[in-house]
Image 1 (tube, protein in one colour):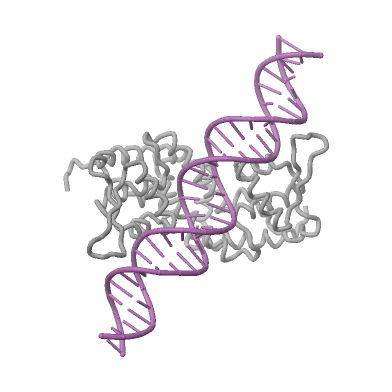
Image 2 (spheres, chains in turn red, green, yellow, purple; image 1 turned 135 degrees about the vertical axis):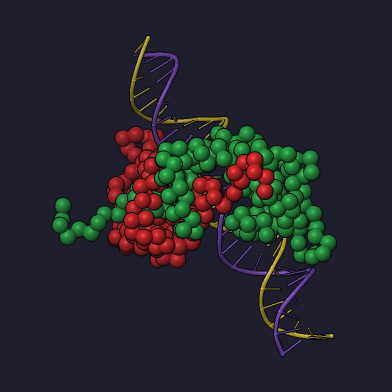
Length: 142
Length: 142
DNA sequence: ACTATTCCGTTAGTATACTAATAGATTCAA
DNA sequence: TTGAATCTATTAGTATACTAACGGAATAGT
């Protein structure tokens, strides 16, 4: 080993790679835990809609950190599943108002319960105090 | 506020959401820092190839945490860019051997340098000791 | 030697996730 | 009030990322 060698570059220790792996694992656990046939982003859109009641498509995207093109696809798939409604905003003809279908609003409490379980399982390899630390540090990276 | 209310479910505090946001930010920074026209996964494949010299396509996928279908697409795009070579393994006709083109192996040191810079910038919002903690905790989640 | 299993790669299909270009609607400012 | 700038949504294109199904090749166990 050359003593002048710069510290090696290990893919496995880079923050980007670790974030990607952690994300992969989370998605896997999400699919195992969540009862309904939903993806993590579809879930996020529903949770946020459950909080706001209704919301323009673009604003919902901003609130869930999705691109305008991404949120459009997510909403379209939720619409096809009969979970959300898409209506024009009569006060601003640029806007499309998204809301959870009235007969489906009762799914939100179960989604929140599932969401808590997903987070719990995802974080289970580390202690409670480590969990707090991780969430705090991840928030600072945003 | 109902005193019996369960703790609220905040999307913004869930580990999955935070991981997704951290990943988005990392990708943005990656694109700003890395000089060549590469995506994070293409970068990872090249770094790993630089380490191994040559590797079967599936093994490269496993070493970089990519699905067989995903690594195929990544290699195909690197091949189109003239960065990697794809050859049959004469000792095992199931395998395809991937290697960096001989006249392109000199890009690896620069990629490592860029990779270090990406990690540094990504982690810059937190202190050095927090960075160590974050990496340690992320590894435990894998 | 043969069979079951495992391994390798490909393909098709679906779902994020981004950029860039476009176009209509609204708002702001001169 | 008109013109510029901004906002909203759509579309096309590219790149991960996964599942499932398939077929060919190698290997393990009998």
